Image (tube, rainbow, N blue to C red; front, top):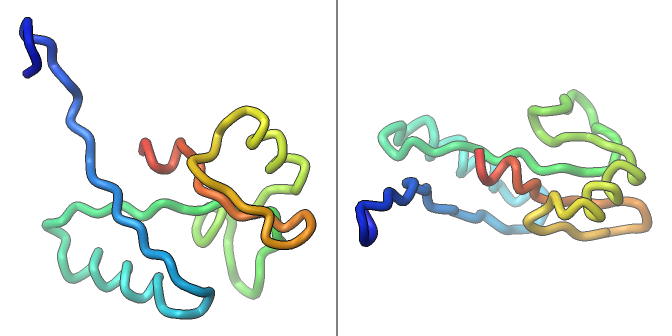
Amino acid sequence: MVGNDVKVPQRGKLLIFSAPSGSGKSTIINWLMEEHPELNMKFSISCTSRPPRGKEQDGVEYFFITPEEFRKKIADNEFVEYEEVYTDRYYGTLKSQVEK
């Protein structure tokens, strides 16, 4: 409660794992989620404009969209953060995923 009985919605905490590709971030995150369900952790799926690799699935490992769609989301301020790693190869975190 904050002054005059105004209710402030509860918000979670954001935990960021950042490391080079292939360093084991997903392995650590999956272990934490499986071994410590009491933490009630949720996984934020990133967005990319690169095509899926191997058995990657849209909405599981990443949200796969075209570079044009990515630029539209940038223009619409839909990202918490993003980067153009190579020409037309974007990666970013959607605000909708963090809020979810």
